[in-house]
Image (cartoon, rainbow, N blue to C red; front, side):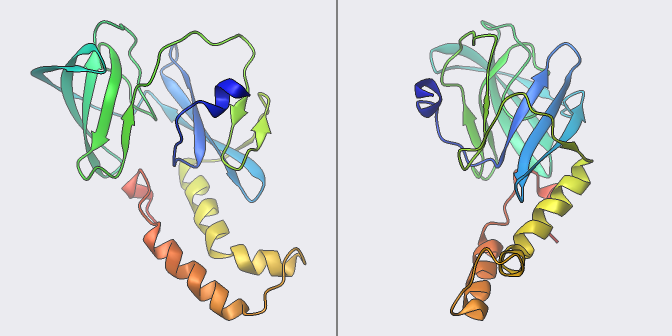
Length: 195
């Protein structure tokens, strides 16, 4: 667990597992204590490669652009690591993506290290929930986001109905919570933003 706690912190609410041979990836996320997952095929990203080069994190890199999920991205990839991969669903370039960010700087990923993990592994989800290669409930991407937003919207009602929580000022707490949700509505894929 020490190696896990030394990893950089992230704001994504799930974990992505990629199969580089089949060019697909699975997104796993917890919603109301249930592990859900959906599949992305063929890394749904089309790239425009620039002739611009720069040194990024000690790697000679080349610039590329794409649009995905309602956002515009700029990526820097290196041919020094000939792995057609990157963070989130990004891949398909002739080298490893070292850095990628969207045009608004709402999301930015940077390579911190490259290493070969042990054969056995575990997935760490936000909230310290650990699952060992455990299957989840397979849903479509649209179903996943609908379930996620439904859970957020009805969080307090479910907690009170289940008897797990009681609040002195329930109406005030719900109003405050909904105001916070309005400001957290900046998902990585704007195509799936709550209406």
